[in-house]
Length: 290
Image 1 (cartoon, helix red, strand yellow):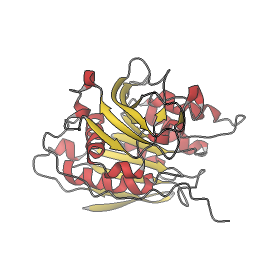
Image 2 (cartoon, helix red, strand yellow):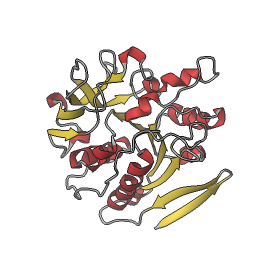
Image 3 (cartoon, one colour):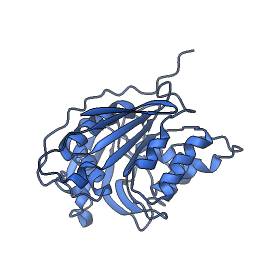
Image 4 (tube, helix red, strand yellow):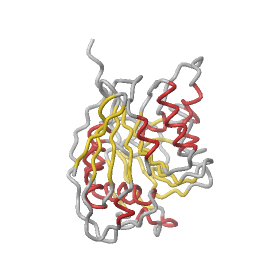
């Protein structure tokens, strides 16, 4: 069953699933808020079908928030009030410059200690000028998820758009709940992000390591997915993967599903429901119309 809810800022898309067999009522009330706004990777297109499948398969419900008027809307992401009622916040952001009142909702959510999940460019969610009152938010990824402190910080870069990544499970973490049923090795289109040598933090659990294929410069293997308990006590999951073609790769889908459930304190499914229909082409950065 789908529903819509209104706020002072307008309509927020909310989807609620019916109660599914084998899912308890408590699980069915879990509310996931997806916060999307990136110029390049189409999180506004990849996360909605994933959210809908998670609702259908596991009895969740979700709210989807997107930048306005489109992915290039760096200064407006309405509906952040929904975070006050979220059991999990999922972020796919890139270089936003949101107003203080919208950032305040993110700040309150983070400091509440509730779980958080982030994709790829969320390591550099914000891009305020150096003299802006919110410039410290450019480092937000390091506080929230244990990523480098913004693009370029501590050598945070990538190895060229022509590259892709071979992913393998860290053997020491093979029994981690998030990796249940995930193939020990798989390939994704994402070009590898460099987060080493300082990130993720020493107390993070590195679940997956990526090897760059056809890099444009010397490339060491780097963590591509980890869990971490941040300073606010939140259970967090972060992955530097998230190219739209990654979302069509079944091991990556299973990783994401497991991570969402793990963040919510729910067990990863022993039986997998099969590949999700998430087939979104890469759009690249689309410049706003003049």
